[in-house]
Image (cartoon, rainbow over all chains, first blue to last red; front, side, top):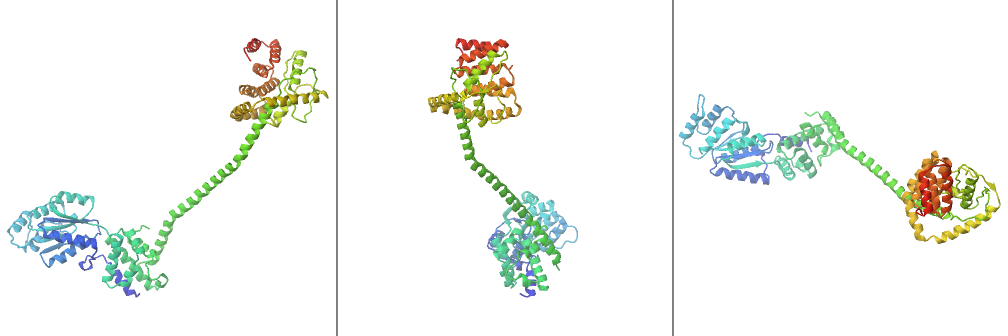
Length: 270
Length: 278
């Protein structure tokens, strides 16, 4: 295999959120369909939660891409922590109202009530755990007007559970948890990702044994897997450059490489 | 660009670290299994030696039985014989003669001196008391008549053997076994320090075990070491009574009471005479 294949394979696992890189897995597809159906319902809020690296951002990105063609959707990948800035951004994006000075919640609610938009816009808020309690309370009030639908993603920690309880408990129609991949799902995920980039040889290198090893190290976490595999193919590139691959072989991925990648990424404390 | 050399070194360190617990477990298993095997091997040896031990015990029991049987019934000897030298080609029993001599010695001297059966001592030397090498204090003179007497007594012994039923022997053996360890231990100790308290204990113990010949013998030994131990006279007299030598017991106690004012000896004497003590 030429070094370009390893470079391509490496780039597949760059940790970026791109809806084009979204990999269809059975379980995830079911969840995604459920989320899409929920958005059609007259809901106030949808909570999407899970541990870091379980694909929440990717999920939201994919949803944005899919919905944007049929309805008004606004995705905020990074939280707008300033309250005035948050209202001003929403006023501009949803209601096309530019506001020069400070915009408080009362003024923003006036804009909302005076607006005359046909369909209810969907606002996708990523990393919602970063919003202040005060702002979350305002978002709740805003969702109560049924003029805007919110889909928020949260990291699932004890603290975030508290936020979920306090702000969303009575208002959420759909609560969806994203989990880490199983070994089988992980293998499909890796191979599909590589095959999408036409790295078929690289995809064939991932046997059950090597995938299980990766699963042990990453616990099926997508972000950790991406990081690990990026380093793995980086190691391949270096060995290829040094012409050391002939002694190692390219049929299977040696455990040594996986462990070296894990050491480099911090998954193994050596 | 990755620093592969550094990464490989870190990986090597990690592998060594990860193998350490396995190595420790492996070594532990080897050590444990070695110890276990050694222990079982020891157990097997013990098991193999068990039949030998059992045989040894059986032999000892048989020997004890023989000793019990070899202790003669007291047969009164018509002719007073002066024994000067005793020859032992066989297990011979001359206790009656010695006792005769004891009584005569008591009559002759004011000092009371109990003398043991030499045969009995010899038989003990071959069995449970191999240590007891002390020569009997009896002054003996060689006489050819002793051979005749020995033969006579051997006949008596044979007759006695036949009269003892199997049931009786078994009963005695079981009792002996229970206390045999203790007794052996005491005998061992007695051999070391020749303490009359130990021989007296043995006399008492044998008396409790209804082995009156042994009790009689150890009472004699105790008396040889220390004549003033009251209990040795008592056990001696009691053993004589049990050995159907009531007259001898009375005689001995009477002699003893001449030089002692032992109340227990007096009481025993009265009991023997009145027939309370049988």
